[in-house]
Length: 112
Length: 113
Image (tube, rainbow over all chains, first blue to last red):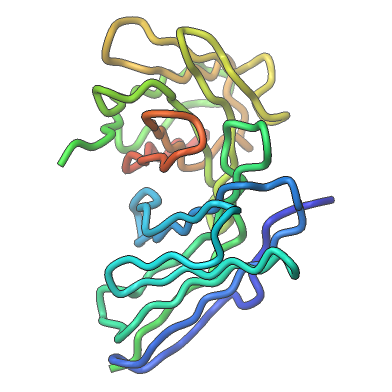
């Protein structure tokens, strides 16, 4: 069935390096995408969002890229810090729906 | 910064018992949601609520589940007869509008024994 999924379950990067977390989606009717960060024992925390009429959006140290042609979403984190260690989920809202459909999550590990 | 609050943080219940999970959404938000996350798995949508009625529900949200907004601030999820497989983290979320960022609470860990 159609779903949002992630390419890598775990990503390990050196502190200070840039991180790129990838996400594939299969529903071309999805028009809104969000990246969430989840630390252990906590709820998902909003990072950044993007709508389907855009291909790039920047926040503080984060950039989301959307490639609708290949149905691919990525989250770039610049100069990763120890506090960036968490599980990152992409989520989509399929056209006309209310609820978010989450991907499986990528665990980002920051090496000192 | 306004936040979504959930109580209790952890609930242990016996199989077959009823539980009520409570949430206080952000005060100026109009859309409310419940999600669940089974340990080690992804977050799954259960239900959305707007204008005092269910707006959308997933196939997980069967007849044993119900939601209510009993007053102007609380939003509850009731599970009528809990099963072992209901054990999960339950997250409440709220948003100002549909298709905008949803803010999540810290979750209630439900353990059914």
